[in-house]
Length: 269
Length: 263
Image (cartoon, rainbow over all chains, first blue to last red; front, side):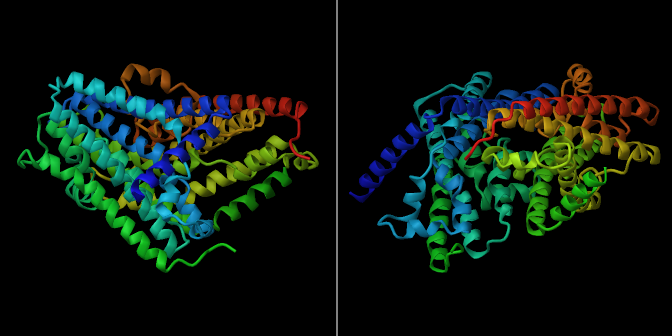
């Protein structure tokens, strides 16, 4: 019952926020265009690398577009609908604005999730979707219902993984107002690295992105199953299990966040 | 001239005050550098290229070390444009363009030195094939240093042009974002310009963006031999001069049509 109410609150907040964003259409379109150029530039880098090198380990150009597209779609869906957490939240903690949320009769994470949406990211999601379609075409993926469901599961779980990683920054902010950009290495660094399959990297980075920030489990294992070139020699059903690492990371981080809130002392005045 | 120098010196000192942010920035940039070098290494192993890999690694590290030179802008100026406080600057007995040019140059210079030097030391300590290689020759290093200075002047000139557009649109997020993105791609930060298709490179190397970091890096790795140093420095100087002239004239025109926001 509570869940339904929360969801309704979230949806109506999204409606209000989208309406407010559309109040300045020229500025909105300009910024969306900037996003398109940004993600287009990232994709251009992949295209040019494929043009020069043909393949990365066992992965063909089409496979690489598929991995890139999966990361773009997932990461920017999170930046769009989870903007509350991925955007200003750490600085809200740092500046003491979090206090205003504490007096309202809702959970903090719920309120933060309802506080922002970033529809400009549609441009990045579109680039990712094109890359995903192009990749699956070039790699000649035979789409079946289970494969489509696996892709959806991967995106869904990736959403929570990325939210969870962004929460680390908020948690660090509670304990120290000093620079916490170091948390960016997991989020933005994870995106930059894991838009390529994880076996491109040396062992320490592979371990980092499989265990600590499990992009490999959430995205690369199911993607490689869809492409029928398994990343790890594990049985098929593990492809369904591995993405659950994403919600697990989110759950852990949400728990640590609520623990950290106990020692929260407002930084503002 | 004295006035501009003292603005420059004051800004230099101010930049040294945010040490915590510097440390975070360094760690972040090192991490990105490691990811990129690892990726390009794997690609190289799959299909070796004519250009030695050490040059690509050097390119990545130098780009990461001077990242702050490319992407940082004067937050005070942006606030002043938005709030209209820029009107007070008109009272200064100085040329506005020169005043802000000195400020942004100090900010970019100190910002990139503070981050760049520790990062380059780190990159030199990495094992061969991962880190920053030595310059191709002592002459290559001698040519790369003035080229880097000209590159800095070129970036600052471009930044002031971006600011001139911001003064018209007032919202920094549109045009500024677009110009910065163009810069990141065409400077070789997203992907080294040396990995672009060879045909494209001939054109890209002539654009103003290639004068900022690409030219000094290629002089350092010896891709442009010392005998071509004069030619490279000349192209850099011409672009820098042209961008400064364009920027200054845009600022003058903005000054004439300046409408101050606010009461």
